Amino acid sequence: MARSHGSEESHDPGFGAYFELKRRWVNWMTEARGMSPETIRNYTNVVRNFIDAAEMEPSEVREDDVSLYLKALGQTGPSRNRTIQGLRSFFGWMSDKGIIESNPLADFKSKHVKYTSPRCLTPQQIQGVLKAADTMDHRRRLVIEMMYRTGIRVGSAAHLRPGDIDMDAGVIRVMTAKGDKPYEVSIGRKLRPILRELLETYDAERGPYLVGVKDRSLWLWCKQAGDEAGIARVHPHLLRHSFATHLLAKGANIEQVRVSMNHGSLAVTQQYLTTVRKELTEAQDLLP
Image (cartoon, rainbow, N blue to C red; front, side, top):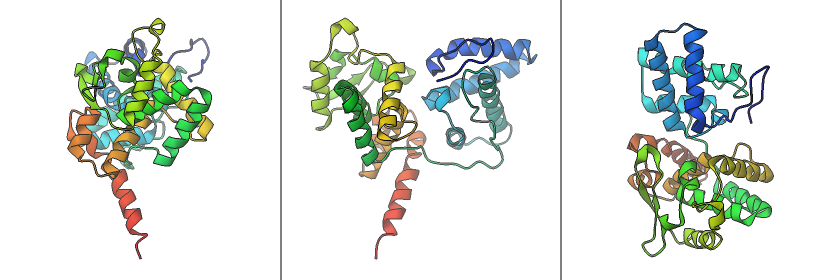
């Protein structure tokens, strides 16, 4: 959680509140820094694009996340520098204002970027998180396992309605999706009983949505389950990373994974291959 500094009020650092953050940040760039409208427009576009790709809270962003994003963009020269400067301005401003506890670009070296694959959990760690969630609340375990086995984004999970799940057709219709592009997720054998139990425990008094809590609560559930299991920084998007990586490791076609992740570009999905290739290399080293 973010902490309050000086006269600054405490803020929810979720990217869902970006538009309010953007308004304050733009005011600061205009009034305190005297930046030109063109620079401000460039910086806000840079941050908006990063937010669309990152799908995590500002407090969860690390230097490696920025490095991976820059690698996926493939920018060079002035374009790359502008992206770094825009992100540095945004995260630096949030850090100074106490909206986030640390600036992921504070020590960022733009000329010597160490690119890494997305962090993911091992299958054993996933089981540890699920068992930990079960000790706190069985329904939490069901929701967390549903997010892992579908790979859906946290906002999509929070806005699933019971009617979006078609057990007969074997699909979940994800209506609230990135880019306003609904898509379908197949219901596998292990996912089916989880969904059935979630539907059985659905309480209309909690609202129209299946899970019955907001995005922020899902982040908290994951973090608490991770802490209980002794695994730091567990969050919904880490489950999504793990979903994609585990599918590829099990031999799924990369195009199938792209569709399951609802990625607009195959290049975004390919970042998960790095982890799989590393694991294959390590496995080969075990051969006699």
